[in-house]
Image (cartoon, rainbow, N blue to C red):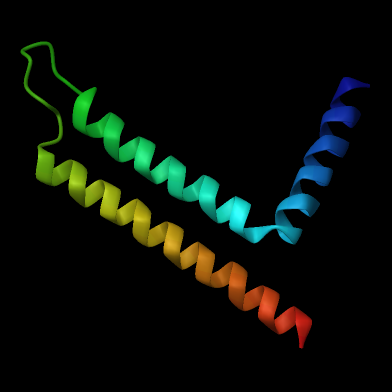
Length: 84
């Protein structure tokens, strides 16, 4: 029975995010920023060297920012075609 309740909550959340695409886009943007920050500061090897250089972390953050903007564009485009 809890699975059905979780499924219903997930469906309500999906509907809410479809009605408020800026919230969804903001969550993606925050995730990309967090991943870039984590990759810059926390991905260190035991020797103390970073797995990603600062430029690598910037590249990853740029990639995720690009994905975020692409998804935002899709959301806004879908919303625009649905309203017309």
